[in-house]
Image (cartoon, rainbow over all chains, first blue to last red; front, side, top):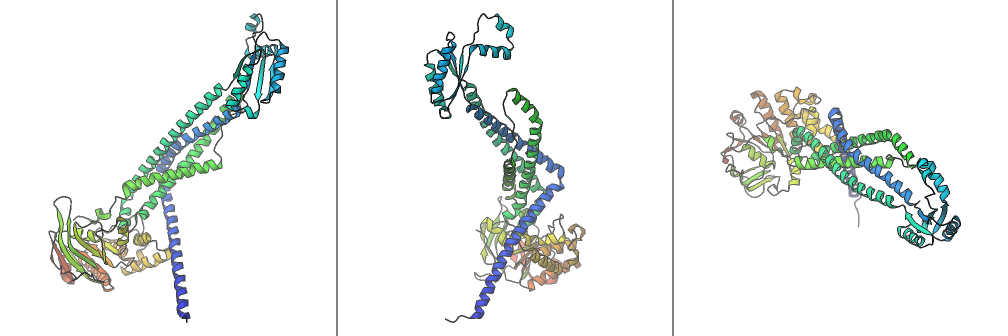
Length: 335
Length: 229
């Protein structure tokens, strides 16, 4: 079959042209996006006070739940640290002599579930108590030492589960001469329950504040839609699609989000700096290595992206409510 | 190009704006639409622009029946229809150039293309040297011409005008009418709503007359199903 070379080259040229037209289309689409993004940013810039106020409202609304979440993470870090060092305390009956206590200690130390055992003998315990409690004089009135020998048992890693510790406690309670066994996990459980409760409260708060942010941005964008009514009508009149007309407002929402996110970051950083001194002192009093951690780079980025998404969403709500209904019929005049 | 078949438009109340209107306009035809105020001129134009839908009958533009056109298709129809208003609807927050460029912006024309076509349109209406000005600085006649440039910048096959000379003195009106005449010569279908009888008589073109929603003159439809192509 003879192919006409001329036609072939023509076809190739046609394909070329259509490809370049397609490229041009994409390019002009991107150019348009850039232009709209820049324009809507400039509009915010032209009304600095109003924009700053919106950013601040948004920043406060975002900073609050994020601050609480950070606090929560720090608290969870503390409880995790303590859980791993859970210790079982066995109080030995008062009448039991030191030698028998030492035997008990050796017996425990031989147990596979036990990592280490420390025996605190009653004289030593009294001495420490006297030194640390400030009740020296009151203690002097006592005729004899009220404190028992004590075994401080640290379980093996493998036995540190709730069940493991429970079994160990039962075993030790069965030992001769042991008066009482205590696992001081009660407060830890309470702390855990409280942080769990707090976490839910924080999430609820975060959702409410996110909704507030969406509404605030929605309202701001609504006002901006009203003020650009003529432009919207003309754009619709000359054949602008809904997405064309929406675009600048969606960008406006995203820029509000960006500003809000940045303000939130600044607020967080400021309050962190303000609180870090007292927190360190408090942690020092509890001999805890607790510290308030700020947002890392990933967290900061995530915050800003979420803020922009919320702003975009708010704008979208406003646009859906107010823009799509706008019809250029109104400007065409009477019947 | 434009065809109305038994078109009736009733608004919610008993007010009937158009009653069984029949007419057709061929490609490159220039016609006037006239009638007392409230006779239904604007309604007729709005039906072509798909700002309103007919209560009965069919509106056909460029071979497309507009009655059941889905909402999201409407912008694409409007891109083929240029409109000029009495109050020109220019935006005062941008230059003449940017005003005229709007129809090109919505179709995503490239900046190079936009520049070329906007200048061509401004040249056509004789305002090439005013592209950087704000429309507010222009006279009424110039503003109207900017409006016309915007309406024709993407070379629509249909041009509608609603009282385009309403605020202008006779000399300017004649100027503007001459422009419309030129567009129709290059194949644009032009429909001008006006009650400027003197102007209509002077130009002597086909005139559609509306009276209380009825077409009383000039309504000879393009016969048959095919509208002018």
